[in-house]
Length: 197
Image (tube, rainbow, N blue to C red; front, side, top):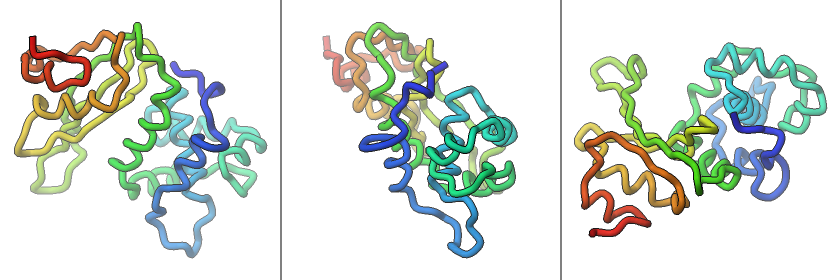
């Protein structure tokens, strides 16, 4: 797991500054916890291993008042599980994903690491009449952290998305693994460090 104590939370390029760029989907009236606090707690909890809204809320209960303040809180207590759930479900997930990836990537050393690329369909994460979303993700093996992710549209597949997924990543020196369907010269040639030969 990634050690969240070594991550940049404050100041320029920090998590808090990045989260301030997100648009709060809630109406101003009745907001008790700033969007920055809810998302910062959620990101840090996920990096510490939390995998559900309940786990995020339980992780947050152990935070000191100083840590809550550092994460942008104006209150003594962290947001509740229903608050975390409501806010996170309303956020622009694609935008949050891109911003967190940009913030997290400088803290992850890719050279000499294994980077696994895999696609998953998110069962049960769709509206009636629509197909379930399909995501292509790049995950650091050792850290178990998703460093990049792209949505695969209904009218395409993973193959043309792979170069777009890898192009912003500093993959030189990393061992990239993917399903056999990606073993194509054209795909390799389109990646930043690939060659057509």
